[in-house]
Image 1 (cartoon, one colour):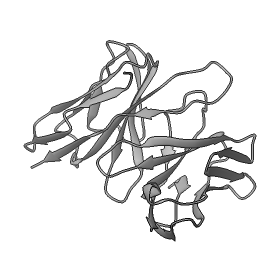
Image 2 (tube, rainbow over the protein chains, first blue to last red):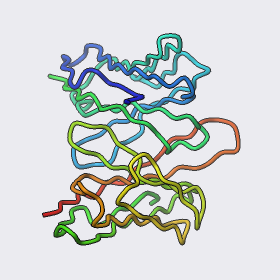
Image 3 (spheres, rainbow over the protein chains, first blue to last red):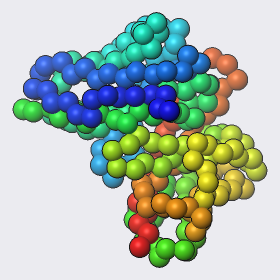
Length: 114
Length: 116
């Protein structure tokens, strides 16, 4: 049973436009959510996170929204740049004070076209 | 500079042989983790350790073993009991907080293991 789901395997966006990546989860005990960016044959790099007590967190071009009632979070990238092309993983934790014990979604491959 | 080092980057082994993947961190993090990634899938937790000489099984521990003799090191052994060992293996580390702001994991560059 997959507790974290990213239902879109891929997304293509024009440079300068908004990219919206979605993630759904089933476990109500998750209290911390993270987005990671990953290039092929490399380790994921942390992008942005949100605690379950918040509904929005913003860092530059990246904003994460959390809708607890719908068990849904999304990552908005505005404006999108070609360098943003990568696989994005949504991850969730039941213990945010230990940030490495994570349940990951399957990933969404973002392609930003010039 | 600080970080997580995994070696080697590529590893080939014959079926039935045990193989050990190295992971070293100089971030002074208490916790270390091993994940596995298969094509088209997310990362899945194999083992994790919060303190030296102690570790816990993750979601897919069967066929793997670990040790944590030093804070900086968390090697993973893929044994012959692992039915599908070919995968991309990622090591990570994080701090542990008693309370307060949440933390994130930092990942190494990964080791691609191919068993033939």
